[in-house]
Image (cartoon, rainbow, N blue to C red):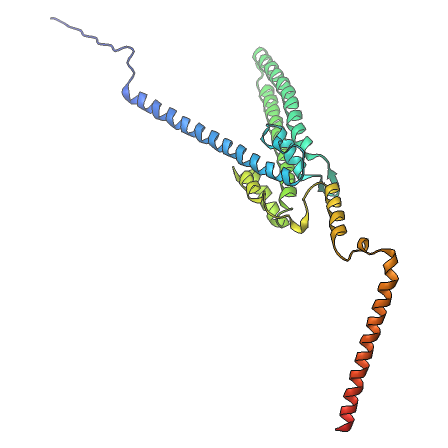
Length: 271
């Protein structure tokens, strides 16, 4: 009997279907990354333009910090001003917006090193002693503590951002709307930038927020000095004359009233 075997192997030529699937996946990934980058760029530019205009209106010396990374965070806190929260004052919120992430990075770096060393020690101990229960429990505790620390940081920095934006928005709108805008700015992408852009040229409520407290006091002094009839326009020498004139006018008015009353009574008697 004659047995003939034929083996044909194709090397270096992947299947066409798998190549197309990989291309589609890479294309979708590229579109997602490109969309995220475009959104971040638009948010950066819009927020920078809005804060630049607000800083100009507030009379700040360096409004161009709105376009500088990290410095724009400080500028946003300065636009807010000191924050009153539960009878306490948070001064210089811009500095805290910068310091808190830096402190978080240092603390989390130390915690990460300690965690990895502890986990490695637990694994080695478990391998040599064949007791895995305690090691697994210890690793779980470290993971839970790490997650809790991350959530606590996110809550702290988010709360500070909400308070800062609330302080900014409340100069242009009601307190309720300011709270809503501040909360949505944390949750919705681009919302904060668009909201700042919308309010950048809006008039201040009750004339507030037109600058620093010193500038506001100076402006009020200039306004009161320029108003006609204010005490600064009246000299001390003319005060007696004004009093005499007012007394004469009141006497004349009383005479007119008395004469009119007599005429009415006479006419009523004749009838």
